[in-house]
Image (cartoon, rainbow over all chains, first blue to last red; front, side, top):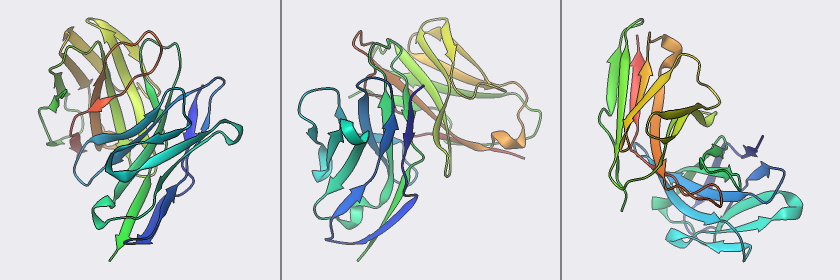
Length: 115
Length: 115
């Protein structure tokens, strides 16, 4: 069975600082990987996804993530954080060959941005 | 854009009541999902459906059932609500993909409180 671990429950950064959110997955083959963001009181919005090809993936709002097979990781990065990035971030993994499309999510990382 | 609508944003119910959470998507997606979101636990899959009248248990189906009589509508049912079912419930949908997992589009969520 697939699983996802987000080691950091809560991260605080200053506005303008760089950001890296960690995600480690467990899956027996090449996974499909996703990052979602949830603003307060909202549903989840897709930031970016990795299915195949280039291991550095660009997403919306200036985010990027890098798939590292050797480390079973898919960390999310942003060079300069804005106050509006304060939210909860979820990493998710999905299986190849599954026609049902279900995803397994990590525990989430809450990002606080100080002015 | 796909829109996933959860009809009730906030509900307060009493222990033992039967509760219906409704979800409708407007883009002809084959797959629909119900997740439960709790702080520190991330999103956990309750049930999913890959076609009308077809359903599969997720990771935490106990105490829940689902119904999918029409392609666009997926209902989550709590036959006898209990206080430990107080939570945020998120509905999602996705297109069928023969290759594997696909992007989920989420509704805004239904926050259920059971007293």
